[in-house]
Image (cartoon, rainbow, N blue to C red):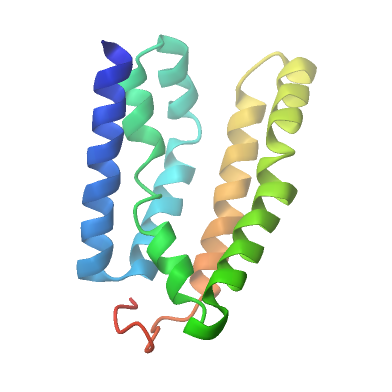
Length: 145
């Protein structure tokens, strides 16, 4: 039952952040999400250690609501599918694919989630800098932030 509630809250969180990105822009939500991820880097592991999946769901999905729309709007229509695929899959291979190995090694080496929290905060900082460097306005889609 807890997993069902957590999943429902995650869907609601993603929906609300998507609505907010439509209203306030993709870039501000990307910036906010990464700032929140940095702020959550340590508390999220305290929450995970409680085993409360509802809190974990809320903590991890604030930043994701605007991501798909923002990535879509970064590319002109004639290269949109290829651009999105290249960007998303490259990030998956370079970052997401190695993250479990890196975090497991950090945890094994240090014996504490503090090192993993520092890694998460560092990744969020890199994403924040990337969001700050992205264009403010995406005129082709007419929704940029």
